[in-house]
Length: 149
Image 1 (cartoon, rainbow, N blue to C red):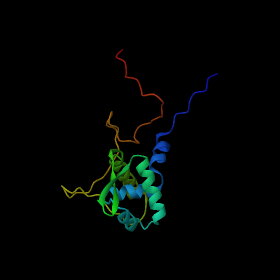
Image 2 (cartoon, rainbow, N blue to C red):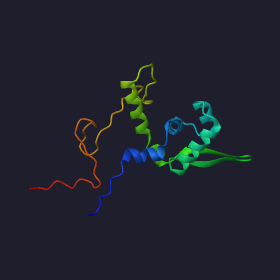
Image 3 (cartoon, one colour):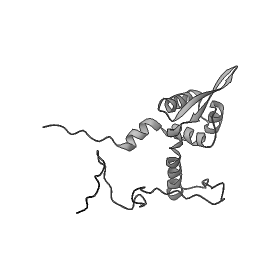
Image 4 (cartoon, one colour):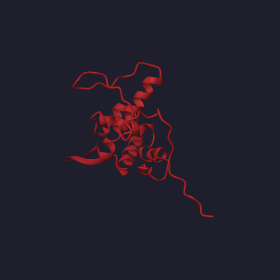
């Protein structure tokens, strides 16, 4: 009997790339415009060795890339890649979840153009349904197109 491969959970695989809470906070700060080691260290209050490891991992996993901003002395900054920029909705959904379920005064997301508060929601691009309103399952293969009977 042939063993079926167990589908890899996309959440588990995503966490392998993103890492831990420090890495997520580095990505938050990168989205806020921080690019330099000292900026991240000051914002996060993280020890330099820990920050070095997180920046290296995020660079290796393709969420950040290093760019030289000074030749003398040589200095690099960390900028978001496409994959890193694609993480913004995840950050916003974590924040939206915290607003619903965590105590305390929390900062709000504000649309710069309109000045109104942003209320992130997650929807299925195919059906337009808000995530969490329909049953779901995981599959190794995409659902086939419904047939016209």
